[in-house]
Length: 215
Image (spheres, rainbow, N blue to C red):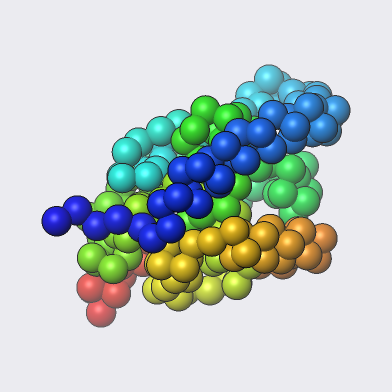
């Protein structure tokens, strides 16, 4: 039997319509800031402003996630991209610190790919590495922010991060969403949990699991 997340009435008839309405308002309010970021990145990157990447959403369906680009495409002698921490630009570091890089994801919310609150959408390559409990994170719409993001963000472990994701899925409600949004504002103002040591964000989950298996 296919699993389902609780509180379907809230998710379908309250959360989804409110997401669309707030995304429209958010895009109107954020437009001046997005324009400023666009101009700054255009001048610093030579026009390569947006970062588009395939992510996994609800029911493990793929979609294109949009962000402002904060890293360059520098490669090492072997032709491979340098580590994220080495490709993060000074401008990109500021934009990421203030979470301005997330603003284009308002379009993802408007398109119905994402919600304002939910588990962060991750890479397709991670799918084979989830256990059954962790896969529950895909029973709801992924979010711009989430329970894991206000409880350590990129400074916590992958296992703990997924525990928070599943906890959110099992407890989804209007009150919890409002609490997470309030805590997100606090975290953004304090610029907490942006990067794990030696990384622009945190190590890839697939690499993390492979290292554990190799021990």
